[in-house]
Length: 122
Image (cartoon, rainbow, N blue to C red; front, side):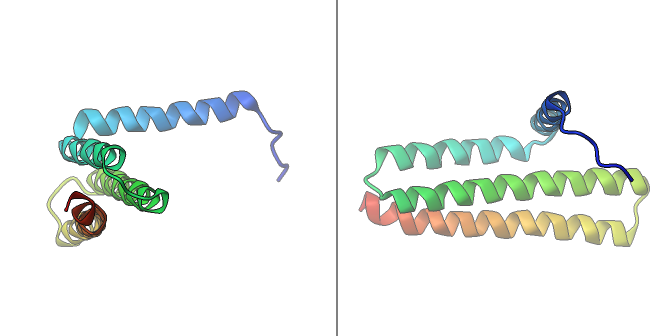
């Protein structure tokens, strides 16, 4: 198999696909609004409160991990719906596990925010 040459046009189109995914995500997923509000609040607190650069980095990483988990969860749910349109216990379990990953990530992000922001507020 011959290796394909680097193509700036193909790299640009890969960004288009990613942005198409983001647009689809925001137009179809109600939890995106909740995450967006939490993101705006965390960014505002990071700007307003006297926290260190390292703490800001932790906030940014926590925000990114929650968004990644939600995007992966959405992709897994879409794939499950495509593979099996009817109710199936294994598909339900897969979707529940993906949703649990988002929940765990969000709880860790909330704990991180509390550890960083509460002392800065007090």
